[in-house]
Length: 384
Image (cartoon, rainbow, N blue to C red; front, side):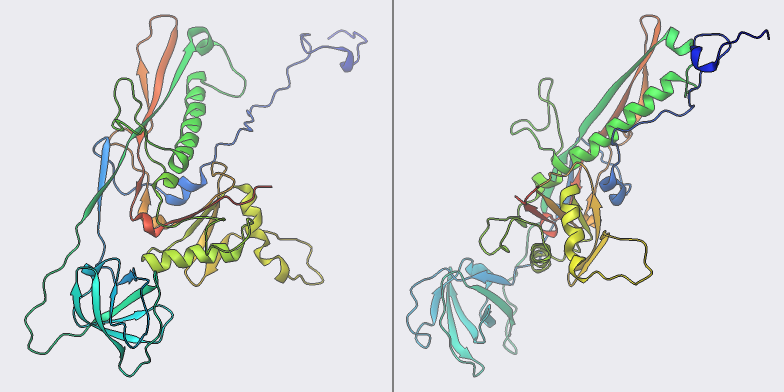
């Protein structure tokens, strides 16, 4: 080639003697990770209806509470009212939480118990309204007839499926033209939209709610699933709640308080603590005061990935889609995100009416969360 005298810095990329210098990789900075869905894993089965149901049951309760504030003398007060008299039988040994006194139930009249105070040579103690009563067990009489049968009713719980869709449309020219960083524009658009839909699925699983009326949906009402946060009611704690550890910052006292409440109220095995970025940094500070390093250590580690307590070993899952003031404590064995049968994410080609190719990415999923008392939620934590 003839000498031109031009330096390369004076030549533009449009000149024929210089080729374009463009990487073959396309960088994506938008977050699309789904750490909670990854932790839960694929569901064991599919949903077979837009109204997905499952059964739950529980054992007969062995706890109740006093509903009486008329006590005078512990040696005289042998009758008192409880919240649920049907939970007791004659012959039950009972004990008020925090008390050393044992009592024996001799009669039940609706919600009024008649008891022997100071049973088994224990000392009668003062009783108070709202004290928790533990039913230790029943002592049957030898040769007695069978007691009245008692049972619990199975409960049908449910959630609705939600449809996730995204359209893809690429012109004929765009399909034919050579591209940098990709071989097929249609395939590339499918991948991008699929990432968005899976991201939205995780966000929905955590935060979504259902319409108040007609949750089954209609031509004018969109059907949506109820997310994890909306499902929980038993173990939901706010930093202002009475008895909850003081302060608005997340600390071990709050985590252990909720883990203990779940342990006491259910046989749930919490194994996931789900947080956003700010609360994850708070968890990392749990061990800050006891962290030590050797003289030759050159790596500073400030991260807690697993929290082990008396009530379970919990993996810490950090997701962008958690409310920043909240912490979820979950038993992952009781949670799944099943698709409607044949409706997991897929691409459906659509007829084109012009010089373009088009289609739609479709998926229909629901959340199955069994035994909501096996999970917990903390709200109103500080976020700055």
